[in-house]
Length: 86
Image (cartoon, rainbow, N blue to C red; front, top):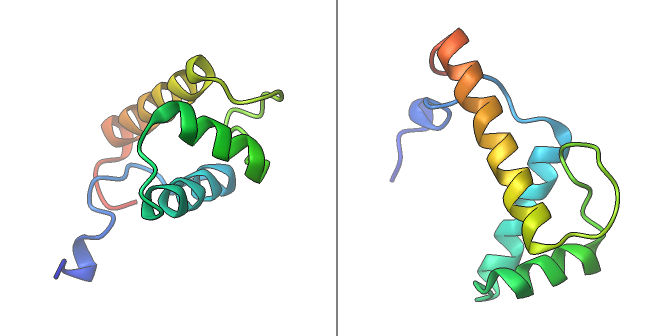
């Protein structure tokens, strides 16, 4: 079992509401055994999950990749600036 004190040790900032929603939606999709990204994208569209970037439109594989890369870059920058445990 993970130590609760270490839960957010690698975060340089808290998740935004849209990032948290995306994470929860992805968890629920993966929990159902869906791992094919094309199907994941379809499920995000069915759920009406908003893009964390604020852009609108349907999820596609390219959009999914771009959103995840943008989130990772933002967290990397925040981690660099703020250190761990935000």
